[in-house]
Length: 235
Image 1 (cartoon, rainbow, N blue to C red):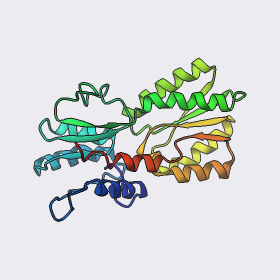
Image 2 (cartoon, one colour; image 1 turned 135 degrees about the vertical axis):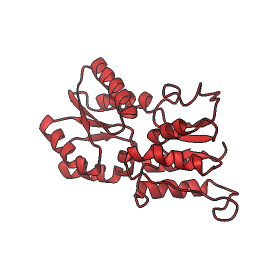
Image 3 (spheres, rainbow, N blue to C red; image 1 turned 30 degrees about the vertical axis):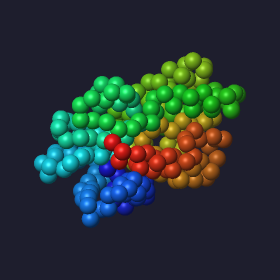
């Protein structure tokens, strides 16, 4: 994972992963070798290579950057990914129904969802002309396509969209200060482990600053993500 071992989101995902092992009991009939990048994406390639050199049976990549690192490290070890992006566009799989190769997994199709979030915001707040999008610039594989599709949607709806970036939790306060300055009517939160891992803090900042009436993010993001982490085992 690209999260830290003590990160609440990481702990929730790990718990869901272990629950999903079903008949496999860690320490008895299966051994899980964990790697935590602590949001340092530059560590992922070496971690993936190390796992391949240890001759693991399968690699579970818990983010798009982790999956990219794993795919670059091996063409033979099975890889199971979870991503918010389109796995076909990323080159993970040949198609959704016939992945092919050594890579398969699940996707949240964030690029398709984000414009719908902006559309819903626009319907809820028809008088608001200024909106904002929060992305994680440290993850350009997700940030760039998400920015592109939401900017396109904003143009369609005649909205002024400001793209704001946060690469760490420390950036969140500055983001909300900027939202106040912009008088933004609403915020669309892009797909990123950083944001789902700190959704409670982002919600608290919204209440504290009273910046806007709505923050468009799945309120049960952690629940949905942990459900995803129970899914890889049938593969």
